[in-house]
Length: 432
Image (cartoon, helix red, strand yellow):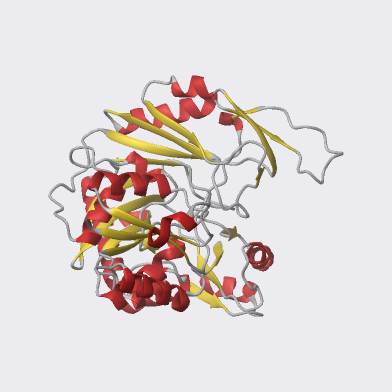
């Protein structure tokens, strides 16, 4: 039986789906996380606690485990484990991307520099060292601009500024967010890049021996213009012209090559601007975030997680073609900071024709925050239909049925309770 070490950070959404894929493939799983698991004492070498912020130490522990019980693959479920997985695969001679390429995907400045060296079209950018004059850098790249942290993901801390003063204020806010995320704001650099208008799309792919196999191209029908960049709806197949979709695929492949990626999953974000210009915004060496992968099925019901595990183990990839039906997902936005008290209308939302599922990812009674501070979505709506337009309509109609009640934060006892707000009227922040 093949043995796979899965890097599953405690905050990940992905554990159940990767474990289900492993069960389907009949492979043994070692669960590695950044927190000790409740039953780890009885699991022996099938559970491992790692400090993912210390890749050297984490890799040594993985190598020691392999010495006791050999591993056939090491797979990262989310961004936090990408570098550790790459280094472990290199040490153990397993299939994976190189540590150098993985590191470029986890540092937005290194990513930008690699794309620039290869001539890949991207926004003009400057790297703001600690203490740098962000307002001046914003003037250099051109306004409006986007200020973002180098190390965070899921649009956390990404802020648009329309003037130099706004850019400086954005930088201060981002440094506060970095503190909350457990990072040192006095040493972390920021990225200042020109805002690129246009239609945003996402590419999901799998690199096999350096060739990008595109699995899906998603449209993002909600305008992502700022000041924040909270993604909501993803729909596939894309409704862009075939020639434009081909150009998007080519741009994603060129970006992956420029970064030195050769094996494993890729998730890219791009914009299609005036005249069909394709600009690469981001590229990560992992699958689409959250629970969005549930919108994708391949061959005979194969999940994206199963494809990733098959590739890592060197198993046949005979069917990479996505199912014929259109599909989509909506990441439910959080409208205000406070405590999540209730999400009503769930049965009505699920009854909307085309809706395939609804999963809330934040338990009632937990604090919630909107972007740019937030690090989680309220939940996910899934839809399937014959055409992409039907999928989008179903997601919007189901979202309109939800009523989200967010109460005051615990230290705001004097604040009046907030009324239920139909989800269709919740403000949606938008981004690059």
